[in-house]
Image (tube, rainbow, N blue to C red; front, side, top):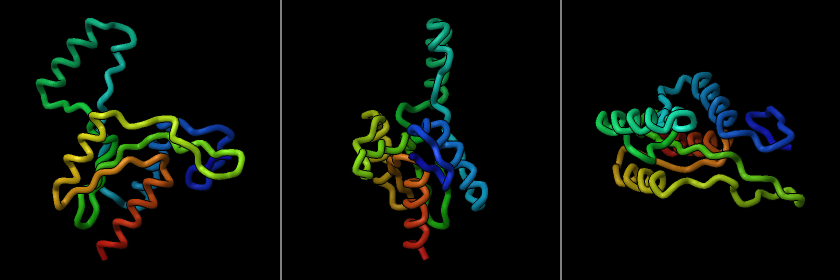
Length: 141
């Protein structure tokens, strides 16, 4: 069984389910945040239109690899690249992640981590994101 914030799932929750749960947590705990929507759904239906949208987006500052969420804490701007949680093996331990960050996502996180006031990370699941955010908050106090 898989869990997100004490809600049980029979299969690995999707990235969308993980992100929605994390957004609920952030709102409930009064974080200031925003999501970076870097997707172009037109690419599935109309390749020409998708290319035009992509070119316009790039000319307006779209950057490949930008993390899914940007969260502001007391002293740090946190960038979270959220992936599906790791599969649970028969012995109960966590397995190898089924979704991995792209090279562009890792390069973006490395760039962010070069700033003293920012921190970027990849989290496999909502609960892992919350643990990392909590540890950042406790270190800052």
